[in-house]
Image (cartoon, rainbow, N blue to C red; front, side, top):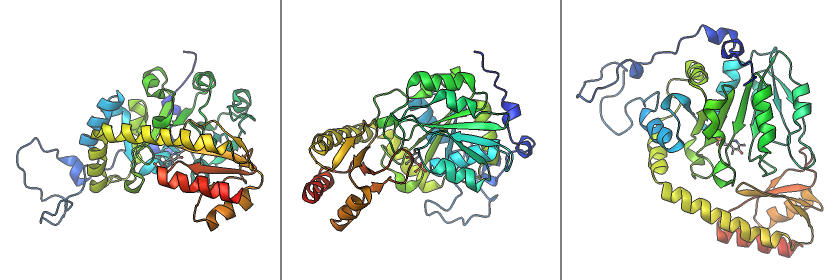
Length: 349
Ligand SMILES: *Cc1c(COP(=O)(O)O)cnc(C)c1O
């Protein structure tokens, strides 16, 4: 590999010297014998959640490691992907000095987090067919460029990016390449997780908020080399994943049947919705989707959005996003919800 990746040189200066905060629950790992814990000033009366949660979420990570085919040391969990992404900024980007590259139209949180962390966000638009413009992305790279964020399948466009383009960025860019796979479970493309060992600069994020049906518990997954994960571990809040979330996530992750059947049903529903969208006259274009939503171009997005709200249906108006003029994004719901969407579209047509 020609990539001159050097993890040490990417880490934010003040983070280099940090050691992970050692919480009471970190210090002693029970070996299975009954111990009396008088170390964390907790209330001793058992109600299921009176103890601090495991700061390293060991049981949950063991199950995830097995399912995803990685080592526990390659996983970091957070309070949603949003926290995971924020930790990546805070671990590697020096405020007012470093920069990142994003490719609009894409997920809005990369820019929000860049702004919050006072990091310059260099934007390189996708091509007209919503693919990566690798050449232009690479011209934006300088010595202070720490991260390129790739969302694939991409939100809000719904497509996955060309594998060759992503490969080129992984090979050419000496900073971190973060691939956000929030929608990977709906996609026909394989996850980049299989190639984690090949690329020292690869960071993959996933979430339980979409296919797994757990947006309410907030659990984000981050996969990377052991070295990158160790850096993120140094700066994460000790108890960032609460006990209820760990328990509920475990239950869902072990129940792969629910995941598979719900994803299958959502994809079936998507096919049904797609059939009908083509027949609505004011829908000018339906973009190919590898996710659980569909982006469509309409005659007048603001007008159609308002009309749908009047019929009790809230979709996402993306018309202000670059390359997305007059587009609406429909999440695929239950059959009943989708039927109502379709009826409403027919009525306003
Ligand atoms: C929905 C979504 C997420 C999920 O974020 P969480 O904080 O885990 O709920 C992440 N990335 C993209 C691109 C998304 O659309």
